[in-house]
Image (tube, rainbow, N blue to C red; front, top):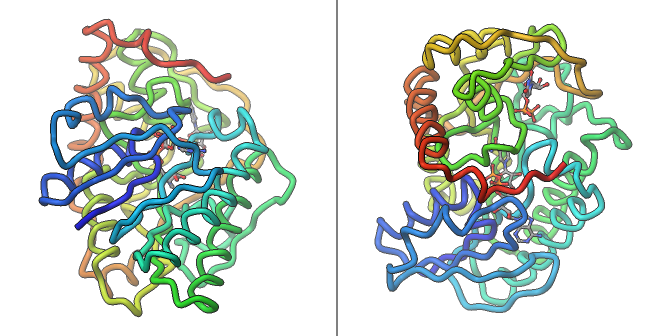
Length: 321
Ligand code: NAD
Ligand code: UDP
């Protein structure tokens, strides 16, 4: 199959491109390199079935493909808050452009939505039928509301134009190729531990997240894309094992044998207090559930960041602050 991956030079996108190529597909990756790196897909450049194109999804793009994975969007708070207007444009105009393309060429299109559509949830664990608790003018709203409108667009193209859509609500995902300076908790804690810096816990560290290793997500995304046509989602994909941020810090310290100290900083506003996916829908409809648990995934991620540091490769990454 011929497959378009927007955000293909990013963390999840670059893993997805590699996996789709390994499965024998032709893959075109689009990226504007805001948070993605050419180095993430450098090893794929010699593959005759791979093409990398610099393009911003807020502008229309024309191509003939069978499937589109729409992943283009900064995903970490530091990055999506860097230019909130652009974040909304990327989610909304990006969705319009890619849905328009899917409609014209009859492609199936999958949207990388997010657990952030639930905001600071009052229902726990989060089920897909929960509408969420989002502050429309908070510091996270450019991302949350952008992704919510993108879901609205996906379903309207489905109802009005019969576009084959797939909407996946991705919960916190981590692994090698995360941006070392994207400010997300897993990359921050590992970098801090490896560099002997203080581990920055925001708030009291009792807020929870459920961490999914990237390979489990890839399996789910591909199953969803190729699953029954009538199963559009939205469907949660995440690892239901829930940890407090303090527990995560302890685990990272143990696994890196680091002497770093824990320090407590102010909790950013609208930071969700708890997050854990109910994955019954994905289990039932796709026979999917995550297999890689936190210790194993963290070890692989720590190894990646360790190599990045030892290889002197950090200068290649931009600090967007
Ligand atoms: P990432 O920042 O590594 O990847 C996003 C990619 O999109 C980057 O390569 C970036 O350069 C590109 N991009 C951003 N704006 C663009 C634009 N206007 N035009 C073209 N390319 C653009 O983040 P990620 O973690 O790989 O996230 C990928 C997708 O998954 C995002 O849509 C994100 O919202 C979603 N998601 C991720 C997580 C997670 O925990 N990693 C959770 C929920 C949802
Ligand atoms: N967090 C933290 N220290 C950090 C980075 C993040 O304590 O150095 C906290 C953050 O406040 C949030 C959780 O970890 O409660 C997850 O943050 P992240 O940005 O990774 O993801 P999100 O909040 O979008 O789930």
